[in-house]
Amino acid sequence: MIIYFIKTVLLLGIFYALYILLLKNQKSFKWNRSYLLFTALITCMLPFIDAFSFGKSEEPLFPNNALSVTLDTIHIYATNVKSTEIQFGKIVFAIYVIGLLYGLLRLVLGYIVINRIKAGSLLEINAGRNVYFNDQIETPFSFNKNIYIPYSLKGKQVLEAILQHEIAHIEMLHSRDKVLFVLLQALFWFNPFVYLYHKEMELVHEFEADAFATRDIPTDEYVAKLIETVSNHQTPTLLVHHFFHHPIKTRITMLYKNSKTALLQQSIVAIATLVICIFTLGLQGIAQKNTQSKANKYTIKTHPSDTIELEREDGTFDMRIVKRAPDTLYEFADIMPEFYGGEKELFNFIMVNLKYPERESKNGIQGRVVVSFTVDTEGQLRDVKAVKTPTNGENLAKEAVRVVQNMPKWKPGKEKGKPVKVTFSLPISFSLK
Image (cartoon, rainbow, N blue to C red; front, side, top):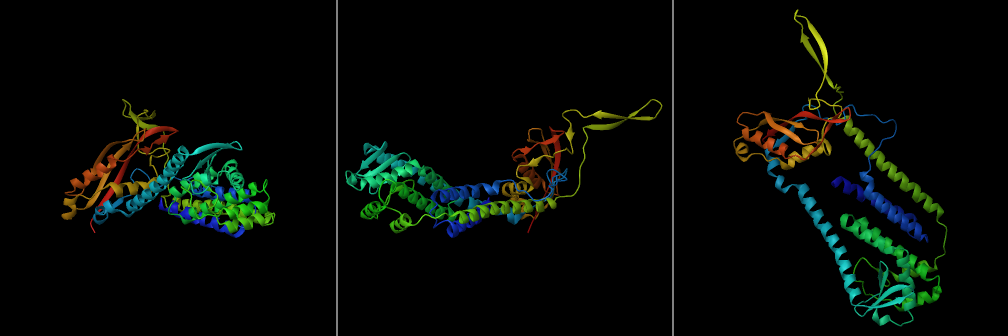
């Protein structure tokens, strides 16, 4: 989880740097908006996409890497287990959840504020749009398909420019982008580039809306009205589009800026974005390949039949091949069962859930417990029992069995494409430090 979040910070930071260097000052609003949306979304998805490596792919010698009849020994230390209640990972997760809930709460409160304003406003239809006038509104804004205007501006000449601007936000579906970035801020509240992205997206929205408004209103007249209505008031929620909030100087400068084709910059950004995506997937492929290379290098072949010996009356023996019954318990299968998430997640599950018995810890009792169990065709763990227990380590064995019994479902093993029951042994070494 932490690795994923680190990747999102790095990727979004790189994409943001590209935008600032090559696109920010370009009058290519649709392109800039598309870039911000695409890179924000691809940053969220890229770490989840299956990694690949260049060249010929190789099938792993053993489908689930290190898992075999006897799993790798998991070492449990008394000092580690005692501290599980205040694990760093749990603290980090708790902090993340608090930030996430706060971000979602802001989203919900935004909707509530807008609905309350809407309920107490005077509704008028203007240019086919619902326009709500309310004396509690301090600055014009729009959200979804509705426009909200301070009652003090009703009937004023500047209202035409404001309505044209807000109608642009509605027709270009800018509210959809706003909601998306508020959700991203909730999910990735720790990522500073999410907030910078949101700020740049808002500015692009304003540029687009200004350009739309000046199609029907002369630029000089529009700018005069814009300056006339300058205000320091803030809008009631981060979900809405507001008329006065963004830097007026920047917007005016962009209105008078000559429109240039930014084909070269756009091409560089497009190629660079593609290269970054491929490079990221390539690195993930290398990491995955290195992980697989650490697995045991052997191949296990299984057969859906057994060879038996039959003794004749004359004392000689005859060899027969007998098919296994459907409920046969396999020691090996074509595809072995696997804990969801692999060996690493199996280790994490045991480390988090297993407690070193207090009496054994105080009395210096340690040793290796071997737990045997069967993964059935549904992935459930059956027949869990300790087959090896250290001297005076009965409680160690009970604790190991308890944790294995409480494991979630595994991916079931398969023989010739059909789920089968497979038996495992899991060594857990209890040690004192």
